[in-house]
Length: 380
Image 1 (tube, one colour):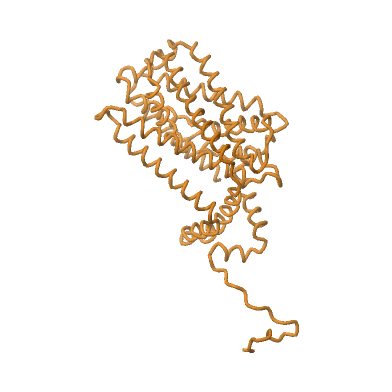
Image 2: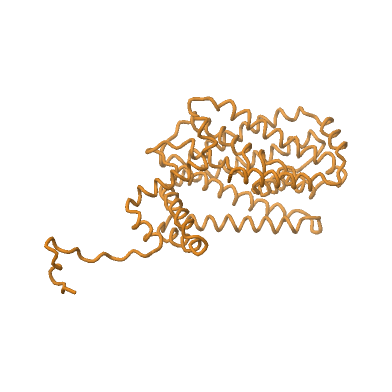
């Protein structure tokens, strides 16, 4: 039932985004722009997408390395299939595929793999939101939509900064982080608070090992290269639609796109993807060019990324590193694995609950074997 609701809501969001994007536009002119595009630019764009895939796969391995060194062949296969699942499953449910597919208990637990993906997402969010805020400073004042985008960029930057602060705090004091989280949710639903806190407790255990400084520097270097390739690729493909974007303008459109697809939508992020690209292009293109060539570019860009990711994922789908059945059950399985791990960290369920509530008291002296109070303690 929950999956059906998520699918319906995702499709509704996608439909609304597509309607808003295409409303009042000449569909015939968009189609003519698609037909008249120079598709030779797809060749370098697909090569860039291949480099993007390798960069993010290598980067993910760096985060996992302190726990377990995963062979690149398996990293590559799981990364390809995981990002395909992220593209085709609604409501961004594919985010759970990578951590579940790569986990190998007991050597590499779900808590560690999930924490690596969360850390990766926070780094990406901070990098792109910060870049969007900076690039928007170069857009002339008075440009329609500029104020809205600047506000959105700052809000997203603050959200990811808050998440980073929480992760650092949780890394330093796991018990306090879990206790605070429990107290926030408990007034709404004690049962949900207990379950979510248990999963959070296991998740934070996965943060206990971080890469060395040298590896962290390489991680951030690869993050810059990864997003640099994304921005450059979008600039390259735009030339096929007679859209001449500077690199700075291309990064601005990329920043708007990254923020836009954070909104859960239908399969393939359809609707939100096109809406975000069109909104970013509206800062730089005249209305006539935007309504035809801009929308044509947004749709072909979406198809190209979806096709590339689906092709990579399908190629590795039947490799020995992938268990097909795990992909669709990943969200539920990740929850169950985290709860199971929390049970291992806290075998005594009552003690674990008290630990999360902050109600653990120092135990009193145990009674002696004959039932008498210990030496020095008066009977009550």
